[in-house]
Length: 394
Image (cartoon, rainbow, N blue to C red; front, side, top):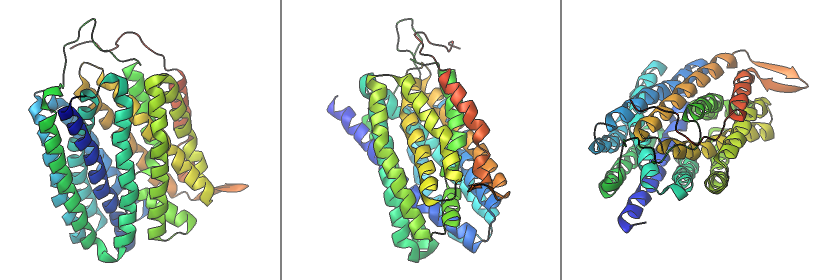
């Protein structure tokens, strides 16, 4: 690859690291502050988590649409990332959980503009032959940062919420500047919308079915996203805050490291086979996590994270070959966030039903995902490889 394009891609990968570090530092800090200081119930905490993904869903689709009007609008994404630096400073000023929800909505809107644009850019500027692997490295650096962000939370737990948010602000600002520099370097390769031609690049799998699978998978693995994960693990296993954050960080890191192998196989062997494999793992994950023992809880979380992180680069690779790629990638982000919202609300609501015993103790909130798991497996096994595109130009 040309040196300028390689540098631009490298900067985007770096932005995934710095941005996720900021986000993962803020997430457990806000989670435990809302639960312990503001005395929010688990359902209220689910509203806090899912309000973020709901706002992110709406702005993801909006970002994909506006980007089609001109590639220069990609710079909005870098400005939105810098806006997070201001938004997180509002959390220490809150006195009730609905106020936290309001700030989470703002955070979600800003993130929905910034991250899907970055994913779109890195997918369309990378050569097709290595697209899934490069995209996987992008997400891998985010997962490494997730581990370090959890460590940063554990290390700064005595700083209080205000001190932690100042550190998060610094990294959000740095991330926005890195994105800005990357988009300047990659300007010549950014193409939000292409003319549809008979001999042009086309999706290898049915994009509609990929979107359905992405939606179902996101709903199932919602229990691993946001504040509810930290609180569930801490309360189910009786762990303190720092230990919970550290163990979840390592679980996510291990899942991310192994997910690169799936991306490599998707590039060189079969995208369909890898989609089926990741769907099966995601479908089984809530069953394992519902059993309230440390090995099964962390196995379930690992399977969910491994499946989702492996599937993301494959889905972006498939959709980046659609002629309206910016809309497609914004759309899949929107669908996944809406599904995460629904899954998080389901978990928060069913959590109040307590637990059931069949020899072992199961969490009711996680057992409620099993019907969705069945739908996911049926959708994945029905996925066919396609030789022709399925979307008509409008």
